[in-house]
Length: 183
Image (cartoon, one colour):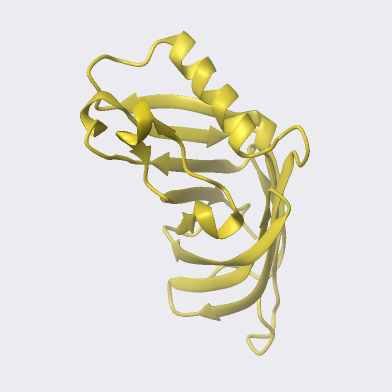
């Protein structure tokens, strides 16, 4: 990736961090696929001038500041009350009262022309597990990426309702877009 060497402070002021959930089960038609935004997060990127040294990334996310933006599908649209109830359920499943923060620290980066694979450790609900990010450079100042997070690997039981007929898929998608200042 052709990102200029330097230190970059990132967060909600420079980009977006989104989570997409997907429904499954025999009652999936009544549920919603959710788009959730992390509204409070911060991070640090180090891009060394020497290509022999790997870039580094660290990110902290306030799990208490996750916000349901929209729900697609379902029998009826999500109301504001539905969104509040979903946020309360998220807080319970993510144990926000005990561990409000999730952190990611890179351990390895494989850089290509306009993309990179960044591997690291994600600490979530008190459990630390490996997570792999696929990052691509969109233009001179913007990078974007994705990751797939399997909730059960962190000991999180995916949401289930209607006696198990409506379930949240175990894997959720993480998407991020960050604008880096010009060098």
